[in-house]
Image 1 (tube, rainbow, N blue to C red):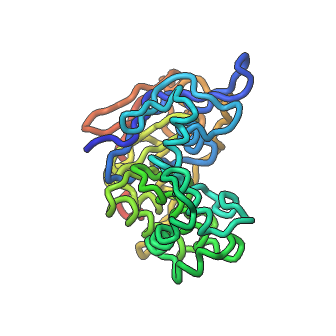
Image 2: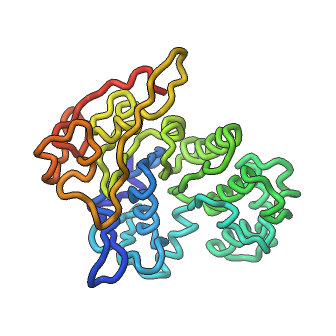
Image 3: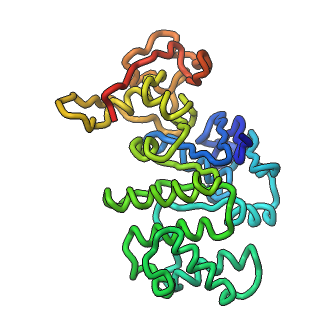
Length: 326
């Protein structure tokens, strides 16, 4: 398949250029057409800043210092603002973590969706009313014509997230980037939102990149997964392979901390310590201070192991069966 998004050796830093803080170190990641990739890791691992910096949305003071971000045939690193405006909302649709914060509280949701269409397709907002109703129907909003006239505060969290997804899909993007799309939603609504994302990507041939710390979400909708820790990807591969037999001790720890759905008791495992802060990463493997199998070699940067078609960044990648963990 063709890569819709290709990130190669991406480095991102913030702060004073004379004394910068490195946030992302050498990240490489690709998303193929018709596939869903999950980017997982603890808070502060660099997931969101990787994606937002790639789209020029990371904010003032955050900058890419090295690497390439290609969206189709367009290089985004160093691209001018007109190119980025064409990409954002057009070629890429973004679903932000907090839909209430992403929506304008003073504007009806239908007008906001119509504005997104108008910016990329021209015409008047009224001419896009049918498109708005179609999009709201597509994401499962009941009585879409009436809900289009509502303000964000008049909708539930699940309905607001559906509106945010409708805006992301407004211009038929080739890539959807969703940042923690089910945060603060109850379990039933989470399942509904995941179904909307699944249908809007796999069924329609779009690519999707899901940023999350929820491994259950990744297992539900993703084809491939990349695990981040301390600004680096430490393991990646198909969801089936990584979840069944993770190779990096950090991935093993994340999966072991999830409760099982099968009958019977299983002791949950918790990783000791905390992730290091950006700019204070240990020399060598950043996970070594928390790793239960660390050895002296871990004080030097670990190599990338790609044996058996797998990918992990570890001195001694180990296969640990996670059967019985769901």
